[in-house]
Amino acid sequence: MSDETIIYHNPNCGTSRRVLAMLLEAGLQPKIIEYLKTPPTRQEMQSLLGRMNKTPREILRRKGTLFDELGLGDPAKSDDDLLDALQQHPVLMERPVVVTARGVRVCRPIEEVLPLIG
Image (cartoon, rainbow, N blue to C red):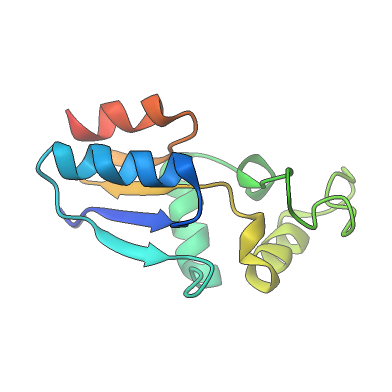
């Protein structure tokens, strides 16, 4: 496991900006990945999900996305269907996702980052 700190970041999101500031204040120098421009590959997403012990459904952002239009609330949608949607529409990924040597978390609310930094 790498000691590299990574934040899957959306600079237009206040929560994402606050979490990034908390990482910097903790003395970390995260690699910043603007996931809307450079989304995680399917393999990277599966790795992140595994490390978070979450399913694709659990990291879907509903508000302000194509969630309803694409019918992603349908329980018949498989994990593969949801991963396909995340690949095609990275805006569907809840943000920010932070990776540190201590683990991986969706840091919403911002307090979710605390176990990762100290």
